[in-house]
Image (cartoon, rainbow, N blue to C red; front, side, top):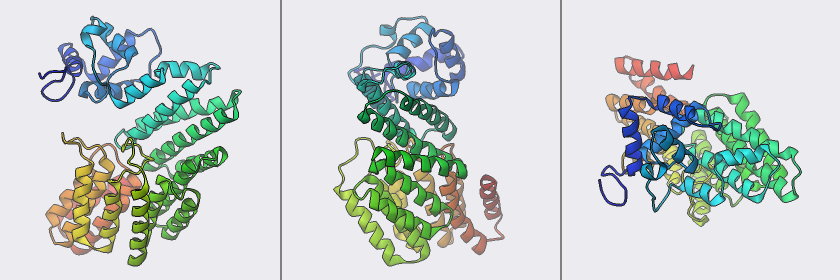
Length: 414
């Protein structure tokens, strides 16, 4: 173990102890959270949410708040200060919650009561930001359930007596969470529900006068149209969204969606114009505070846009180069895939370029790896995977490994 309470593997001492305590009792993580619940005198989130939190705690990626520190110590028969020695720094989410002066249980208590103070709204905003930051990697079903629950809680505030400013803030918060829920619904293949949620988010953004929320609602429409093969619809949605949010991060992604549509329509000139427009917009924006936030366009994502366009255009060397950059920027130094959905599409891109070069074994291997993992956007992944399957089926229909891979793609498309 190194100094400052950090293990040689980079995890805090308390994270290592948490795992050791659980292992010594022969508990699974599910059994550990059930023991946690048995020792709590307060209502706790669902077991699935607690298990997700537990995984973060054991990995050292997130530090328990004061409420859970005391509960964990009690569960393992010790005192809080012994289990959690004072730390100099905290995880970003915990620091934000601490700054807001409230933890989740207190936020819920205030939502249920009549206290809609600035501090309550600040804490709700932090919660909404946290959910949006978990989008790249959190399992879809868990994120959907938690997002839906918070959406109901926040929208319930609109029945209270609010000032005009508070009313707008609640509408805006509801809009952001609705956008997130709509994205997750679409990832899960729930098209009808996703479009209904997207329209609700657009309405909330318009009522709140928040161009960012409205812009992202149009971006989602463009994304839906792209994955459904409605390329003219992508362009129409992008232009409508850019008129609403001309300088917001959504405008960058709208330009990217437009470029992807033009690529599929075979207009290379318009691809370059759209990409350059998006690049200039992104260059003028400040560097984001949190690049995990789904409704923030981080600079590394521009490689992701370009990768897709160059793959469609048949520029294999550029597409392959961008694919490697996407994988690199989406993976932590420890090898953890922080943005698995981007990585999956990058692997499909490598599969396509390998197939075009006649390397069937590598093409299939990349394609299979792209299908792995719990966190994926089914429509986007299938859209890209069909580009690979189409090429393989046309050029190498009799190869056994190709037939097997085609069956695997068909299975997830059902």
